[in-house]
Length: 139
Image 1 (tube, rainbow, N blue to C red):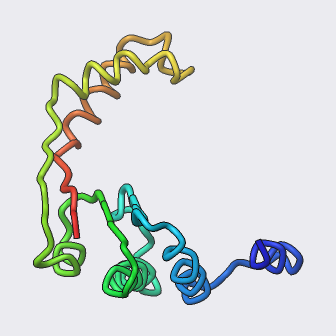
Image 2 (cartoon, rainbow, N blue to C red; image 1 turned 60 degrees about the vertical axis):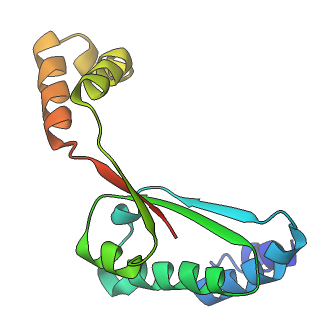
């Protein structure tokens, strides 16, 4: 709470090191362990080595004397695969029928596409074509 108030007061953001220190101080309070879920790690910013630094921080925290469990989802990218080399991986491949069913059920949420069936079909086909599976990494 002190950190929140301090950063809010100065309208600033904590650094990755600050967040790591806070996490390391708080995590031991949870005797059953801490679970960190990172979805779409491949979408993390690559410039300025942001993704690389984030992954290194996660793995460094896991290697310390705290009970930390990480679940990260990502598309298969060389830098992410290399960073998690030696850790458990599970490849999940999206089934085209499931994607299409999901999109058809959610199409009404897309206002501009909801009334135009040709646009709906185009959106569904493009997204289903682009879905090429996803890896779930379990360090």
